[in-house]
Image (cartoon, rainbow, N blue to C red):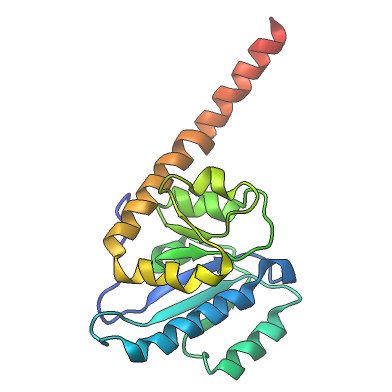
Length: 194
């Protein structure tokens, strides 16, 4: 995949991707509410200055029916798409501008590393292993109340967002690539054998 991500055309919405299980601790409802907040702010802004936002939800789980009701109640059916389980995520990375998360807790999600490998910026809470990957300008670490604002930052300045994604890609390649992991394992084995 190219280091340079494709920017949305003025006619296209900025697409945010959630990739994971639909369970209570993932707080996908907060992502839906953030899209609603962005939608409500659209009336306060010059329509030409900021396009629409969409949330693509790839995954399934026990919260899906409740989340679908929340989308319907908020009137966001045109802005939130439920994609179900996806075996091919590369096309999602190619069509979306940022990965978003709002989890109460995480370890180090593969979705973040996969997004980083494709130079996609990530908006996520500062929990678990996420700060170690996304700090120093390699992502957008935000608490839940600031989700919509971080998403608006991506929408307002897609070029800066691409730079964040490029820094994340460099970090993922330097710390989490197969070559890096193999080198660390070899060092460990050599230390044990000494």
